Length: 467
Image (cartoon, rainbow, N blue to C red; front, side, top):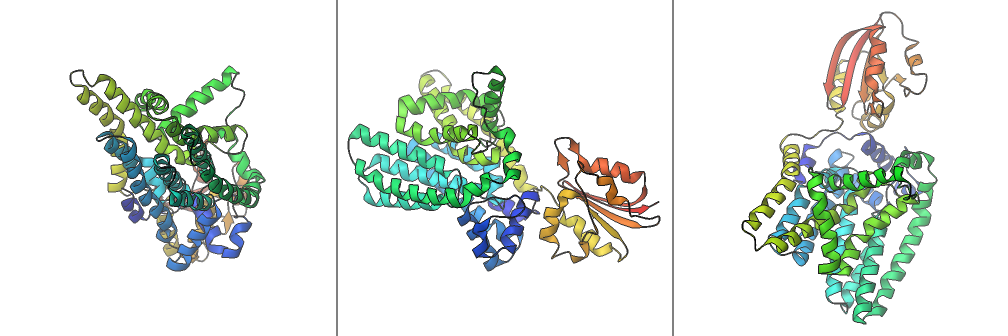
């Protein structure tokens, strides 16, 4: 489910292309100084990407190799987690939720760090579960300290996970009154690592006005006593069941997620509740302080916790009704409904080539047919993909770089004369106000005659003759 989308080798879309261009053009020594085009990613992740580029070239597959490996490894580790926490067949059901989760599948072949967020979460959670069973395991304490320190530089939200890990272990040690001194090592290692990471990477990001403004609507309102904010809380909580949770029928998953949270605290272990639920709560608190965003992809790390909560809820529900006739059938049908649509979505994306913004079809056509006298207009937000693909399609260098619609964009066409031919290419043209390409094309249709039209997924290209 994760390898086949990788093999589809879809084109890089806007954000991927911007990040990829920074990785390709900057040397190792400058990656720590910040990325161009309002991009941000943890430093070790950037180093891994740069290593892939140096070893395997600048292709889409090379750039997506390490995110894929992180996605594959996450499946194996999550399987180990559910085998420790749930009996069969509920462990298998939880693993199926994870395997077919379309959000986790998609980001396993995206030139972004989000699959590393998931890998960091499940890795630290798994090590913690081992330590909760044996607090005197010295070797695992060392692994936990070193791995956590390293993951801080591969994943931004892992700091929330480490807070949950630390507190879960502390609670268990205090209850058993043993091995309390062992927590000193991870405390020191993680504090030093995070202090450096905060100073070198987080502070510069918080000073990037473009990034902060983009995420403004995803900061949690802290004024919880105001009724107009209640809808934000409900919508956001409900939304994360679908993304990153992966459940299509969110209304069906909601009660079992709530039951699962209760079960973890009351029937399993408070340490388990702290380990899986508290990091998500801390992330939302950080969002309220405008230090973290609740945009779905930045909450991908919460996906495993959501899936575990729903699985625990189903397990507890079954225990309560197992003496009733057909109880196993009822729980099986509920689980089937929860997984059906996400399975179909994921399976369809695996069987049929998944696309997001396919610009290379347009560039190949223009590369072949553009004449030396033809003008070439590139829509404002097509620039990211063009920067990445121009070395492959040198004849697609724009003569007119379009302005965004909030600027005086009509002047882009003011120098064109009668009989002049012009190619136009649009990608990443959707905004909150609708399709911006349609507004521009409506204007051009009144000024020129269309000679050719082509479309691929979220990309269109046209040849006009100016009148």
